[in-house]
Every structure is written in C-alpha cells, then in structure tokens.
Length: 268
Image (cartoon, rainbow, N blue to C red):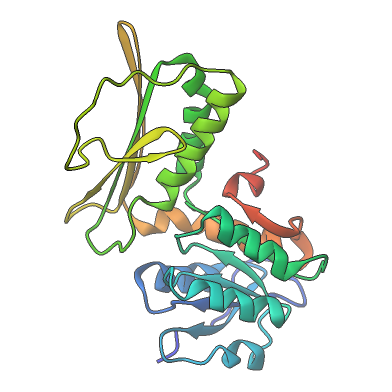
C-alpha cells in the first residue's frame, strides 16, 4: 500500500501546506520520512512512491517537493523527472559524484522554480562533526576517516565519509598543509582503505550498526578523535523536515543545486 497517512495536525498551520512526496517510501529511511513529514506543521504528505509505483502519482497529487531515499542507480532518473515537472527535491540517496552534481546543474539551468538539495547526512550532529573535522584537519599531520554502517548499505564509502574527506582536503589545501606521512609501499589487499582527495577512508559493515563515523587526527605526541553516532534513524528526521522547508513553501531560501545540510543550518 502507498505510504500515505492523513490525520489532523496539532499546532499552527498555514492555509496552504506544502505538498510533499516520498520516493523509496517503504524503505527504512523512506518510511521514517513519511511519518516525520506527516507530523510536521506546514507540510502535507500526499504520496509515497516505491519500486514499481509510477512517478506520475506525484503529479496527480500536485507534489511540490519530493524526498528521495531510493538507490544510486535510479536517483538521477527520478531527479530528471522532478526537474522536468517543476518539483523540487531533497535527496538522501548516496552516490553523488562531482559529475552527477554538474549534470543536475545543467538540467536546472537558469530556472528558478526548482531546487535540488543533496544531503550526505541529515543528522545535525553529523553535519557538525564534518565541520569540526575540517576545522581541525590543518593542525594535524595525519587524518583518517572510518565510517561504520549496517550490512544492508549498498555503497561504500558512505556519502558522509566522502563529503568529510572532501571537506578535509579543501581545508588542508587552503592552509597549504604538507602531504600526510605514510611509509606504506605494499598494500596488495587495500588495507589502507580508499583514498579520496588524498584522505584515507575506511568502511565497516556489521550487524547492529546504524550510522557511525570517526575522524582520527594525529600529530607528534597527540591524537584527536571526532566521532558521531546515529543510534536511531529518527535522528535524521529533523534534518529531513528542515531540508523540505528550505527548498519549498514560504520558508524557501535555497535555489539551484545545493550540497550539504550545512546550508540549511546557516553553516555553509
């Protein structure tokens, strides 16, 4: 059955709530997003779309914005449809490379009626963790990122880890930091992990985990660990709701293609 729940909202409401659809509505994150949007003042959940459902349902329900929690192999087609139909999007699906972001910017062009917000992590704590790591990185010789997720996650490294590594690399480049010391000359099994913009990134997949990340920073005689743990998917929902409000309705303040929840929080 479609993930659409309608009930009376408590608290002040505008005369015309923003109509929201959820893609991937029967997944772990999508089903939680349905509940959060349905409970949020000023938002109305009008359609829950999942595999085998038609995107035309969004148009039929006059959705103004969608939240996408689908898969990297289908998300670009979803966004192409949204942009073509004048529907803004808040995207929690991972797999966004610079090329994909550039493709989205080309799709939108100079039109002002559509916003696509790509969010590597909806947790406010995770956003702050990434920002703190970037601030600290120029002060340490070594930086490694370790991300840990449940075994159903299909991509590695996580979007959060990739975004963290990119932010760290930019901060170190701006500070003219020296290359990180690493005497490894033999690593046939890839034990040192992936390398994103010069930053080693390691992925763990284990039962019992939800979403966790550590940034390990080292200098002579000291280390600093910056860690964030999401213990329940409910922790992401305030960021989802804030993202929807930032790209649509009376609170809209983002335009074009925007990457990162920090722009919603005023940290961009």
